[in-house]
Length: 190
Image (cartoon, rainbow, N blue to C red; front, side, top):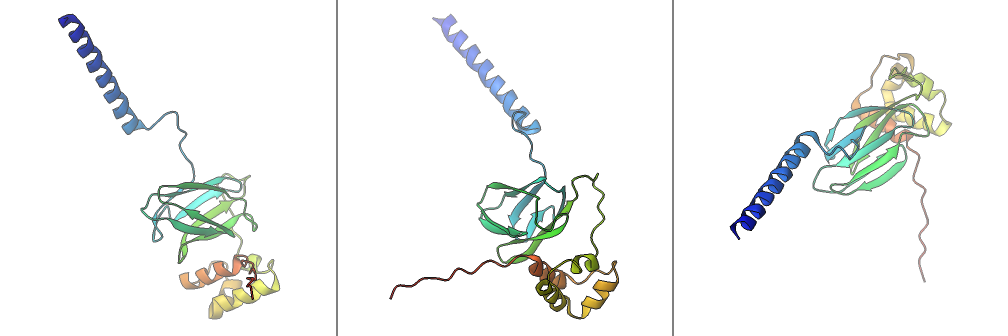
């Protein structure tokens, strides 16, 4: 009878020891069977994102991970999505304007962070478009919006590729480059 109890105790002790060793391993090294996410933007709240600037290649996946307590609504390059607390959502960096810099909004924060998209065939080296190159390729309505957004900074931004406008002007420029949301007329019953 004692031998059976000792055996059960030894088996239980060995099992508990192995579970403990495995648990410590997983805490230190992570789960080897779950692939690590690449290109992750962690959002605690809309004013706390990490990294604030993420560089990816065209076509790469971007993982928005909400590590905060509240859900958020995000928008980047005409993609709008809800991100619940504890949730991770993937989007693909295949934006309409191609390679370039894209500010993303979070709830009421117009530019919470930025994603820089490089051409897929580069090794991380990107030659960004100058404001002049961008301006010369957009529609008349976007040109007008950009002129208004930059105000007195427009001439300097257009002629000097090293000029960096104020953050307020950059935020307004990003708004110009986001396609408008179509307005759906509401129907009311009489």
